[in-house]
Image (cartoon, rainbow over all chains, first blue to last red; front, side, top):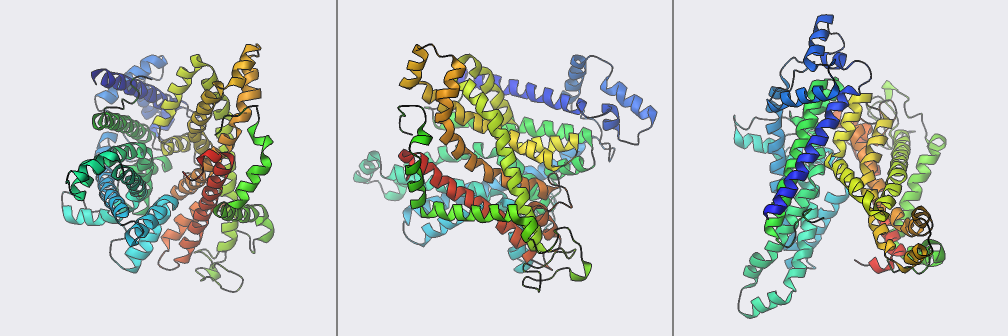
Length: 317
Length: 290
């Protein structure tokens, strides 16, 4: 376990360093002067000189990179050229919205995915299975941004069940915040839920037919207890795997969902920065996303090996 | 896949593949949808009733089945059917071009990584690094550097699929490398590159084709998504994604404007998925019904 953990940590560290180099070089690959890009098109010569000095553009690339990483590690991500605010504050304001949305979506996906999966297995050939299969098909084959628009059309505009857009900060009113995030979270979690449901059903079918389950039943263990103790334990491995695999999708998904429902999240911050060519924000935002992605992947891999010791991902390749 | 005795498993039993494909109802439905979509894309300039960017403010928000406008008009009075036909054209173009990028770069690298162990370490590390970047971040980065455009979307979508194509080909290469006919070619002193080109590549063909049918729907959705977000195809070029993002603005006036382009995207993906599944079963009978 210790060895596996070390290998995995080492790999993640290398990935992060390489990614930070790519991101660092990205801004220097821009056509024209990076100082103009960072300070904005209509910066005065003094401002340009200041940015030039701050970025150390006359130093060798390696020194520039070390200086940049030094700033990043002390939490100095520069200032937005559009708004003039420190980038770290802008990220601090938007990231919680996205994290709340993503967590909510994952909870919905896991709870309903498992529930529907178990239900579909228990009620084979009856309506719960049809319903679960239909939901899975929609979740898998309909792009989530269209699903979102259709949900707004039917559930928000048509039936007025949910608000079509808008956001209430969690601190002012947790219940209303969740109410506003419910529809976005369902849309974001739909495809993950579909995958979890399908896999749960498949792994349940397999487990419940295994010999040890028959033995357990013969010894008098009730079906529901067998289901909880053996069936769900196997499904848990599936769920962790899927959550790990769907992570990239989840990141893209939050950007889209925030755009559809006009949520002031991290994805919107990135998109707005791209449209206004706000390079300091883009650079830091991409860095934060990559960091988060690598760290969550690491956690998933470690969790995976804890649940299923037979598999030590990436350890002995 | 069954173990292949001589090189080319695709050419020798073409008749059987056809037979198996034709016997799959869902596969034929998929093929039908795809032919319809391809016809729409190719013939768009001939069959579109109106120019896709023609604005007519007097005719905005027309419902479907209005005279001369079968699917109605959008907020600027543009014909939705014409815009959809051109949008499908863009979707399929992006799909084919991105797959071309994935194949041209991914296949040779996959062959090399699978055949020469010493290259495998480097290539596989690079693949891991590429997979560490979510594709949307790559697209955002490219849009930030070059400005949003159709070309950037194609590059981002294609590059994101390279590692996936590479892994498939690498796996196939590893498997084929262990077969007897490769061992005997090696015994006859054939060079590595020659073996890859003459024996390994032809046996990877079915896996590459099947993977391509898996990639295209992903890419088509990706293009619509990027265009929806404003970092893909740029107006006035019609794209299904742009049509959706426009339609969301006036969804209470004209809900059908959001329904039709989305249906087209779903149909394209459904067509590729159904046909791809049937193709996989036909090329690889041992996989059928799994």
